[in-house]
Length: 346
Ligand code: CUA
Image (cartoon, rainbow, N blue to C red):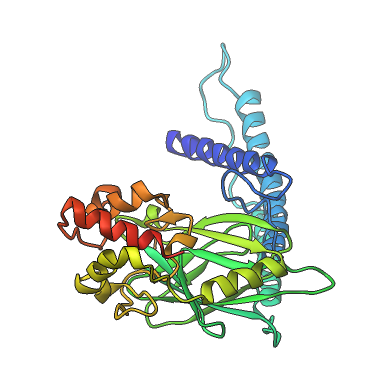
């Protein structure tokens, strides 16, 4: 009973949190915490509709059950002068048994059918010829993001064009994993899609509001599961085109950062990381060709600032426990040179 009560209390407080998050949506659609109640993209609209419908039905059930329970507790409580004998017991009432079998069966059937209809509606959507195609690959603990048709490889930040009724813009995503099971989830854009080793899943989004939306891995995948964050930036058409051409630009190769570049190439960095135009072509860690165009380091665990970058190169696990990038035991001068080089990769 106590356990049940605390479970009810925790679901009520969880509901409070999501409603607060929805109420806190600002003019550009951003919310302080990711919320399925503040959608800005097509499949997420449908998910909110369905969630509201299910909440409505289960809310009525909750009120009826707790209402009856409270009524019975009060009405039939033990009173002074009760004779302490049991009341008459009722066995085998066909009407009551039919009622508590048939009514829940109907409710479950309705919830099942309407959910199936929504899932079918979302899944049957086929990519139009001009859809943006993105492949997202979950890694411990970061997201590899590839645009195969555009020849772009980045990490942890999804850049997509906004869709408007005059010019719809759909983005289709292929979700894969390089190691263990992860789950790709940006609640304001779409539902969760698992990233499973040796399996390819598909999903799509059609964001209708400019802005930056946050998400994260939604399947426990190891010590940094909570440090596997995601950002989606919904651009206007023109801004998206600008972002694409900026990503197409070759990596900078400044004269005064040659020492850092040489370190990147000669140390183990280049066997895990790619910088286009250098011998570094590793794919185990994020592509660094345009590292400084991204706003965070370590998949969202800290802002991408020069100080953080230097600390990260010095000892990644001090900033992100369990991170698979090793500390390279660099001297202070080497750290300065390497940081200076990476800072030019805009
Ligand atoms: Cu990746 Cu949890």
